[in-house]
Length: 367
Image 1 (cartoon, rainbow, N blue to C red):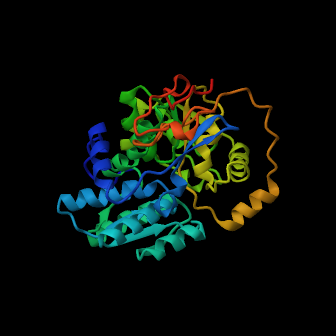
Image 2 (cartoon, one colour):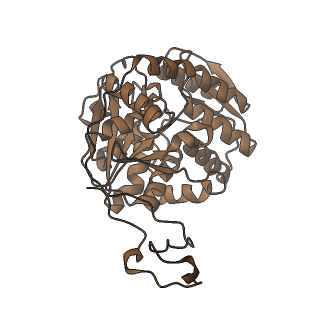
Image 3 (tube, rainbow, N blue to C red):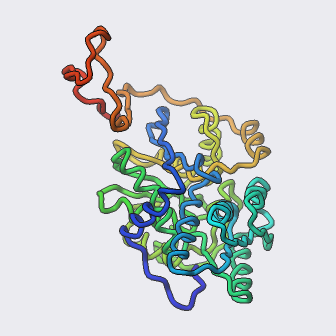
């Protein structure tokens, strides 16, 4: 929840486009991967700088502040990924950053923050306790307090994930994990004008945003979960306003489903995702869409946790796959089209006339 006395303005789709222009020099697009067994595209933000999409919002917030002439040290509370994103962005821009992380934060995320030279303060046993302490330090020392999700610049930066998905895939539905709601709000701003359904994913017992959107404002302590990145007790006020208007639905996932999906990603797709990173794909199994995409939001998983999951979780064997046609992305501009089968390569010339069977590269999508 934003701690400022005045509520900041809600970001718009134009803010997301402005963020994309700012970030282009610093962050390249992450790849898309088609998980054939799940029938779902995956947006691989686990391959992002610092291993999470959070670096987008942090970098955009620092760049926007610099444009406004605000060069104060920035402080943020985070379970890990926002802190790492802020640390890397501050390192690249030569700015000062302080991060407050709960004592329960994964060791790999704490080490990642320290690696980029940010000051690390460990406080409390949850994100909400760390956030309260960060707000105290900001008030005492005049730091700029940067929310992990409830900030217009952060939301706009996260929305660039949606722009990249739309430019490469033209999806029917995008599934996004929700903690405080920054990623979901940004993606919704980027995609709703294009008619794409945006669906949130939360864990059973860690569903503060889903309850808030139903009008339930009770503050309930989240249960223990593998998805520590979305373990938020109080969702963002700004993100709630955006999602109340733009979000299509929220799917609640059981912890056992989340654990199995994380193991499936590792064994079947050869992808390492943290708990929150596997959440959207776990929810995507209940989403009916011709072309759907789940955001793998991060991959900062402790090796000991992954080893334990691989030893303990035995995924159920997949059902016999339906007959489906191969799905591909459009090739980059300037890529030559493949020659028809059986056509001698000697017949190729600088401007070949496409064979009828190869008049287009994009094939039919799976049902």
